[in-house]
Image (tube, one colour):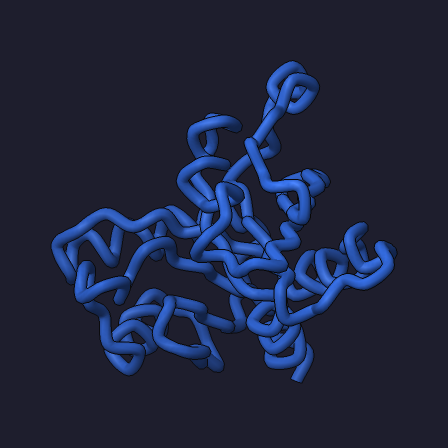
Length: 179
C-alpha cells in the first residue's frame, strides 16, 4: 500500500531541522520501501505492507523523536485517501476560486460533531473553509500567512493535531503516490 506521511512543523524558520535525505533514510530503515520526499516541509511518500496508518504515524513519529531529538506530529493518509481528498474538495465548486489560494489542513482525527456544529474560525469575509471528515479545506484569497484559518487555530478549535499544505502540494503528492 502506498502511504503519504505529512510531518508538522519541521524546517520552519530554522526550527526542527531535518534534511530530506536523512528523513528518507530513516523511513527506509523502518521497513518502508520506495521512499521519496517532496519539498522541505516534511512530505514522505512510501510503500508499506502496513494496513494501519496509525501504526505508520506512531512508528515514524517515535523514530524522529529518537533520531532527531524532538516530537513531531505525523499524519498519514493512503494514496487512495489522498485521491479522495483531491476529488472531494467542496470549495472547488465555488465561483472565482483561485486554486493557488487553496490549502488543506489534515487532521489527526475526525473532530467531535458537537465541536463542528459550533465552529467559528473568525475568517475574513473573503475567506472560506469546509471541514469534511479528517480534512479542513481552506480558501485564503489574501494569502495563508495573513489568514486566521491557520493550522494552530484549527488545532485549538477542533482539539486535534493538524498540519496544513497548499493545494499544489496536495496535488503533487497524489501524483507521486500514484506513480
